[in-house]
Image (cartoon, rainbow over all chains, first blue to last red; front, top):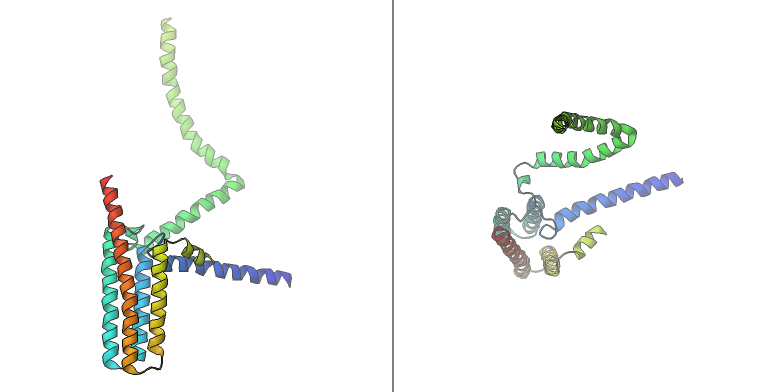
Length: 158
Length: 77
């Protein structure tokens, strides 16, 4: 019973933590850490909500006028978003061009240090360190005879 | 909780503008769904949507001004 309770608590904790970060990225689009994707997503969502509300609650002439006003505001928002992108306001302007590639790169960059750290705990660090230090030793070995020759030359002269 | 924390970490002007936009936008949709007379409802909804859109556009203009100043300062250095 207690294990089930712990599992339920852990599930609720993860379910609460993930949407909160998601909402942070969406809601505060012009505050800290702005991104072009969240900006466009929020403008599109709000536009759809207002258009649906006006179309469902007003008769034909008034609903079309209010829908046109909503679309005008959305177009102005998109234009200003493009101006902000030109001014390098958003953190990663290349996300608009290649969103999937950057997402994969971010996931790989976040996962690779953890994998390296987890593997380093298994004892593979000695091998990797040995593999990394061997070329350095080889370069030092290559450099050492030059130094010894230069050092030996005055010794031979003496 | 983290959403509220992030909201509290925002700039005061940005916080006020987001709050006013949320209030006027919510009131706009509530007024649109309310059982008022058609002309009254259209006027109230238009006014509330004008407030919401006006605050949003002014917020965007303010952000553009900040970004332009930051860009100018970055290029000047």
